[in-house]
Image 1 (cartoon, rainbow, N blue to C red):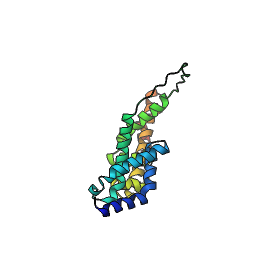
Image 2: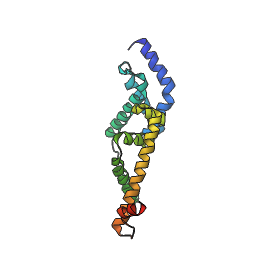
Image 3: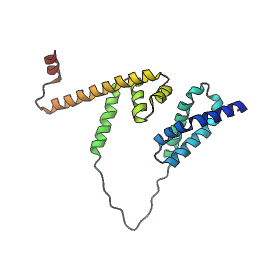
Image 4: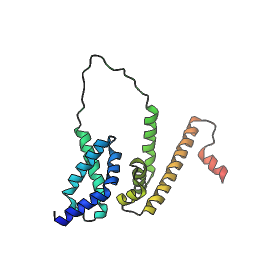
Length: 185
């Protein structure tokens, strides 16, 4: 790596370190682990810095390295068991509703186009800013906003349709969707 590229990498890290640390904090809950994750990703990226042709995509590249590193750490973790004289009280929360909500969400996300799904996941799941999402997906911030707006509207429609269909199936006396549409016309 040439001396100029080393200085360019150092300047990049100085200017982007806060944003990169925020990205790392979204991936791991512990602040110290987030710092370790970022440091590991920076070391791995440093070796490949000259291979990144478009330096404007460096944030996206680093995020991918952090995600891959976190996945490696998760796979390599060792589950530690500590023997004790007395077993702790086993309280089991009923998370059935939470699992059902998550399953419903994953199912209705299938109605979105791939680009819409990507925008929704990055903005709401990964909690990226509009600008970060635009950079990661290679589109303008305005396109991210309009795509997100249409995607959320489509998700709301799908939720309403499914809720209506569920009521119809339960026979709650609510007119069928086709009947409601006929009456509205």
